[in-house]
Length: 444
Image (tube, rainbow, N blue to C red; front, top):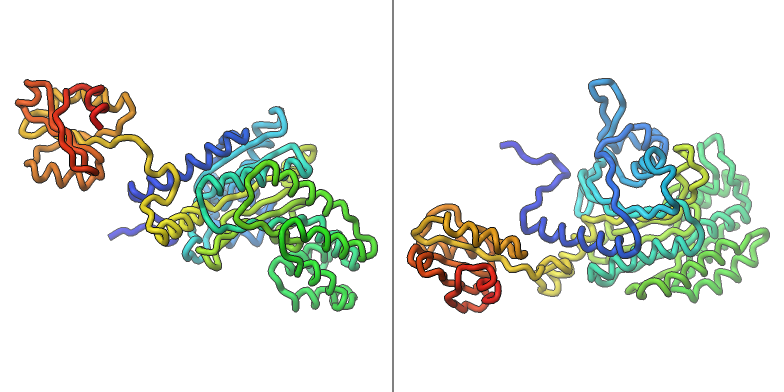
């Protein structure tokens, strides 16, 4: 028996109902923030991703050559394709651009709960505007999206890579590329800090001819915990370090103030000045969201300000700000919380108010009922017509199996009389109704 490929999933109608509800909810919030949906191809030039992440990324990709021997890959993420689209298609569009997107991505890696080889990502990009207000707009969208899902207990951690870069250069690390590693020591240190690798950080300082004891201010910076109240101690600490600018910290403070005005308070907000996101192209505020229910795979959203458009010859539009939302992980967290609370619906809007009517001709032809079925559908009801002959007991079983809220049973005599029997499967109530759409809908 042929089975689905490892690391992929099938979605039944019940699962798709939840997924569509979540997708529509996210898109509705994005539109209210002025963002417009775009879409890019599922496969792209391999060079698009090696230019962004280096040749080392190829081992994680579904890379291949087409019949013209062109190097292509299934897309592993959606930010780079959107940047490529902007460079090709939207150079002259009014800036800033507010773009949203959703789709499948592919990475060849071991899969586990919340991590798949085929996965789905929702994201947004604000292109052509920079600074604290632009960053606050994007973070506010993320916060409002998660509030709209009714996800509980999540935490957003916000930092600014400029604070960390200034601190590291103030301690003597160079921002120039080290030929032995192929990256600036500052970037290496940020990656180590992001991973919490203290031994690696000490080794890096030693390799650069610096005393590992100089890392103590970084430990002090990392130990600061809390919300806006951490900015005061951080300012004192950075002011005590020679040659360190406070500009990035001032920008972060402005971003947090604007965020408080634009979005409701998250369940938990932490200012983390050592959040580096592990990627060199971030330039300003960075943020990530974690949910406890997912354990080690708890991050459901991450983003920040970055520079990528220079890869396509558009330096004038940098920096940009955006985030990627792990659609599958948010879905898993919502379902876990719904199960723990004994709720049937995991996503707001999943149980929409649309009536679901099963129409069953009983020992008669279906043809006379087709205009009624069409009229009910035209007025917004979901209607399933029984397409084969069944006895009454099997009609009831069929209605329960498809999950209809109401059953309209019609016999040949009913058609002559112009009425049928309507059964409410929630209450058990039964009533005779005229065979027209208005009468049926009023009787629900």
